[in-house]
Length: 120
Image (cartoon, rainbow, N blue to C red):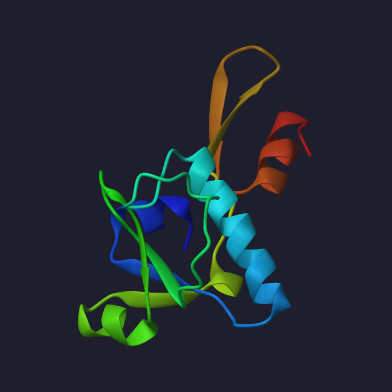
Protein backbone atom coordinates (compact mmCIF):
# COMPACT_ATOMS: atom_id res chain seq x y z
CA UNK A 1 0.00 0.00 0.00
CA UNK A 2 1.13 3.54 -0.64
CA UNK A 3 -0.06 7.09 -0.02
CA UNK A 4 -2.15 7.12 -3.22
CA UNK A 5 -3.97 3.96 -2.11
CA UNK A 6 -4.55 5.54 1.29
CA UNK A 7 -6.07 8.62 -0.33
CA UNK A 8 -8.41 6.76 -2.68
CA UNK A 9 -9.33 3.38 -1.15
CA UNK A 10 -11.03 2.17 2.02
CA UNK A 11 -7.81 1.75 4.00
CA UNK A 12 -7.02 2.49 7.62
CA UNK A 13 -3.36 2.48 8.65
CA UNK A 14 -2.73 0.96 12.07
CA UNK A 15 0.09 1.66 14.52
CA UNK A 16 1.54 -0.28 17.42
CA UNK A 17 1.13 1.06 20.95
CA UNK A 18 4.86 1.28 21.75
CA UNK A 19 7.55 3.94 21.19
CA UNK A 20 8.25 2.68 17.67
CA UNK A 21 4.55 2.99 16.89
CA UNK A 22 4.61 6.62 18.03
CA UNK A 23 7.60 7.34 15.77
CA UNK A 24 5.90 5.59 12.85
CA UNK A 25 2.74 7.61 13.44
CA UNK A 26 4.69 10.92 13.37
CA UNK A 27 6.47 9.84 10.17
CA UNK A 28 3.19 8.88 8.54
CA UNK A 29 1.50 12.13 9.52
CA UNK A 30 4.41 14.14 8.08
CA UNK A 31 3.83 12.39 4.76
CA UNK A 32 0.09 13.08 5.00
CA UNK A 33 0.77 16.75 5.68
CA UNK A 34 3.15 16.95 2.71
CA UNK A 35 0.29 15.53 0.60
CA UNK A 36 -1.99 18.35 1.78
CA UNK A 37 -4.09 16.34 4.21
CA UNK A 38 -5.49 17.78 7.45
CA UNK A 39 -7.48 16.42 10.37
CA UNK A 40 -11.27 16.70 10.28
CA UNK A 41 -10.90 19.51 12.85
CA UNK A 42 -8.93 21.54 10.29
CA UNK A 43 -5.63 21.09 12.14
CA UNK A 44 -2.45 20.20 10.29
CA UNK A 45 -1.80 16.46 10.13
CA UNK A 46 1.22 16.81 12.42
CA UNK A 47 -0.86 18.60 15.09
CA UNK A 48 -1.82 15.22 16.48
CA UNK A 49 -2.46 14.88 20.19
CA UNK A 50 -4.80 11.90 19.97
CA UNK A 51 -3.69 8.32 20.06
CA UNK A 52 -6.06 6.57 17.68
CA UNK A 53 -5.26 2.95 16.87
CA UNK A 54 -5.93 3.57 13.16
CA UNK A 55 -6.03 6.56 10.81
CA UNK A 56 -7.96 6.88 7.57
CA UNK A 57 -8.69 9.57 5.00
CA UNK A 58 -12.04 10.51 3.56
CA UNK A 59 -11.24 11.71 0.02
CA UNK A 60 -11.52 15.47 -0.41
CA UNK A 61 -12.35 15.72 3.27
CA UNK A 62 -9.95 14.94 6.07
CA UNK A 63 -7.97 12.53 8.20
CA UNK A 64 -9.92 10.77 10.91
CA UNK A 65 -8.98 8.25 13.56
CA UNK A 66 -10.70 5.49 15.46
CA UNK A 67 -10.20 1.96 16.75
CA UNK A 68 -9.71 -1.07 14.50
CA UNK A 69 -13.19 -2.48 15.18
CA UNK A 70 -14.89 0.64 13.82
CA UNK A 71 -13.05 0.44 10.51
CA UNK A 72 -13.55 -3.31 10.22
CA UNK A 73 -17.31 -2.80 10.68
CA UNK A 74 -17.25 -0.40 7.71
CA UNK A 75 -15.39 -2.87 5.48
CA UNK A 76 -12.03 -1.07 5.56
CA UNK A 77 -8.76 -2.90 5.00
CA UNK A 78 -6.49 -2.47 8.02
CA UNK A 79 -2.88 -2.00 6.91
CA UNK A 80 -0.15 -2.03 9.56
CA UNK A 81 2.26 0.87 9.09
CA UNK A 82 5.09 -1.65 8.63
CA UNK A 83 3.50 -2.68 5.29
CA UNK A 84 2.96 0.86 4.10
CA UNK A 85 5.24 2.21 1.36
CA UNK A 86 6.05 5.87 1.97
CA UNK A 87 7.60 6.45 -1.45
CA UNK A 88 5.45 6.92 -4.53
CA UNK A 89 5.44 3.85 -6.78
CA UNK A 90 7.71 3.78 -9.81
CA UNK A 91 6.20 3.18 -13.23
CA UNK A 92 6.09 -0.50 -14.27
CA UNK A 93 7.79 0.19 -17.57
CA UNK A 94 10.64 2.46 -18.55
CA UNK A 95 11.49 3.69 -22.06
CA UNK A 96 15.10 4.02 -23.13
CA UNK A 97 16.51 5.82 -26.17
CA UNK A 98 19.72 4.21 -27.42
CA UNK A 99 22.55 6.26 -28.99
CA UNK A 100 20.25 9.20 -29.71
CA UNK A 101 18.90 7.55 -32.87
CA UNK A 102 15.40 7.29 -31.40
CA UNK A 103 15.31 3.50 -31.24
CA UNK A 104 12.80 3.14 -28.43
CA UNK A 105 12.94 0.06 -26.25
CA UNK A 106 10.42 -0.58 -23.48
CA UNK A 107 11.75 -2.58 -20.56
CA UNK A 108 10.31 -3.68 -17.26
CA UNK A 109 13.15 -3.11 -14.83
CA UNK A 110 15.83 -0.53 -14.10
CA UNK A 111 18.62 -3.08 -14.66
CA UNK A 112 17.21 -4.05 -18.06
CA UNK A 113 16.93 -0.37 -18.93
CA UNK A 114 20.59 0.23 -18.18
CA UNK A 115 21.55 -2.88 -20.14
CA UNK A 116 19.52 -1.68 -23.13
CA UNK A 117 21.09 1.78 -22.98
CA UNK A 118 24.64 0.49 -22.90
CA UNK A 119 24.16 -2.45 -25.26
CA UNK A 120 24.90 -5.17 -22.73
